[in-house]
Image 1 (spheres, helix red, strand yellow):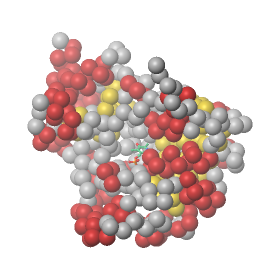
Image 2 (cartoon, protein in one colour):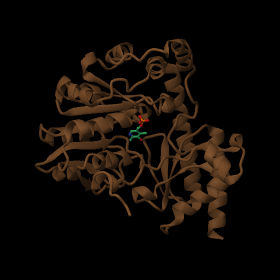
Image 3 (cartoon, rainbow, N blue to C red):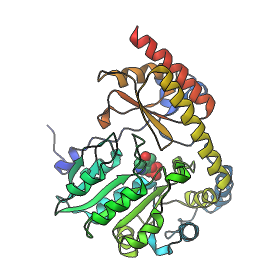
Length: 372
Ligand SMILES: *Cc1c(COP(=O)(O)O)cnc(C)c1O
């Protein structure tokens, strides 16, 4: 008999489904790890920047000591980059940590959190994990409907999550739309603007969210080193917000949530403009490579502002799972998104040109066999 340990809302959590690791697919399908292409977790296909590898090697000798709990050097670097004081910065064990800390810091059990349908899975998890109430606003064209989200805020709403660009759909709302939203949100509601893919935006789409935190005391801008900066395995992200919000985040945060190697690597990556430019250029080219192939295959896709594309691989609700399996058998790992309510679609991360080509060939084969 079940003992019913823990609160009901914890037992109701549907665990996060991560992209399959290469080693697991190799074992399951009897493949060589070197032959596997992973385009499943929106990682940087160039891997860890060399600058960050050197910084970590230098920091390794000090691992007998605890990390700097206040991460002085990294906060100083971020403070300079984003022109905010150091006490406006919260560091996270990945930006996932930032999202969790925000839920714990600003919302009581039973109060509500607003986020969009088809937005990042962690918003639902963070909300559920504290026993809060979910207000899920229907998406518009697979993306955030900010007018509807503003209208959905209730008297007990304490937090709003917005991903821009959004994952898993790749959609984007303009800076003007977000600012109009911020002006409508009640002052006692914290808005988490999750910009995990910000560094991939084209010049003409960029907007001044880091400067907005000076204007909006309830705004928290979240960024990560996991995507464009190539440090997903190290787990480091950060948030910018005014001191009142940051101070509460800091009370919830684990004292040593960002380790010494991650702090050193993040400083190096932050200053490695060459790596970032190379990553953005590869992403633009890879996106065009995918879009051209999807058009050629007659596949519907959602125009993406991130380093991945959501593509529809069939018209029945088993299509995503079926094509995913057919791709795995060919050694290509992508991300099924049935858990997001998108069972006809797959999310495919943009890789190196050669990796993209392998995916395209495998997808053509999988679709042809599926239709036969
Ligand atoms: C990947 C991702 C994150 C979290 O990444 P971390 O590795 O935890 O920094 C946060 N938000 C969105 C929308 C993401 O796609």
